[in-house]
Amino acid sequence: MNTISLRNVNKSYVDFQLDNISFDLPKGYIMGFVGENGAGKTTTINAMINIVKRDSGDVSILGKNVDEHEQYIKKHIGYVSGEAFYPKKKIKDVTRVYKRFYDNWDDEVYQSYLAKFKLNPNKKIEELSKGMSMKYLLTLALSHHAKLLILDEPTTGLDPVARDQLLEVFQTLVEEEEISIFYSTHITSDLEKCADYIVFIKEGKIIENCSKDDLIDNYRLVNGSKEKLVTIKDQLVSYKTTSFGFNGLIETKKVVKEEGIRYAKPSIDDIIIYFSNKGVSK
Image (cartoon, rainbow, N blue to C red; front, top):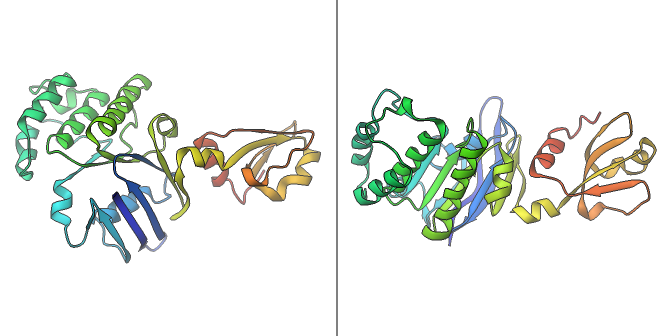
C-alpha cells in the first residue's frame, strides 16, 4: 500500500504554479522532497493536506481520499516543521492542550518518549535547544500513533551532531514502527544518509521521482578542457567554465568515454545545483 499518492495536483498563484504533481510514497519508507527555495515544496505539502485548496488533482493518504476523510487522516499523521510553538509555555502545558485533539492519544507512549529524549516537562519551549525542540515535536506526533510523519525542513539550524541523532531516530521509526516519513529539506546530505526515495521539484514541476540510488545513478559529474567542452556541451544538463576548463552534469545514458573527459558520481546537491543553473551556463 502507498502511504501517500498524488495524481496531477495543480495549484496556481499569480506568479507561481504547481504543475501536475504526481508521486507515491510506499508504506514504511522515507521519501526526500528536494528543490531550491521557492521550487514548490511547502506549497505541495499544503495542497497535499488541504491547508490550501487544490485547483485540480487527487490526493490519497493512508489509503483514503484526503477530501473525503480529512479528519481521519489528520488524526493519523504528524506534521513537524523546524519551528516550535508557544515558546513561553512549559512542555507539560503545551501537551495538555495538544492531546485534546487526538482520541488515540497514548500517555504511556508519551512518557516513554519524554524519557527516551530526556525531555523535562517543566521546561519552557524557549529553553530547549533546537535539537531538543525537534524531539519534543516528534514526541507529540508519535504519542497519538501517527502512521505518517510529514517533516518540513525539520533539521534547519541544527548542528551536525543533533541532525545525525534525529536521522537515527527517523530510521528507527521506519524500521521498528513501520512509520512512513515524507521529508522536505534543503539539507540533502541528510537524505543521502536516510532516504529511500527522492522527489526533486523545480519551478513547480517534478524533475525526478525515483529511488535515491537511481537518482544518483542517472547522472554523472563531468569535467575536461575547454576544447573538450565544444564536443560535449550540447549533451550536458548545464556546466560552468573555469580557468582550467569546465565542470558539468550529464545524464549517465549520454556518457561517452573519451580521452580528456572525466566522470564521477554526483551528490544530490550537485544534481540540484546544475539543474538550477540550466539555461544560464557560464
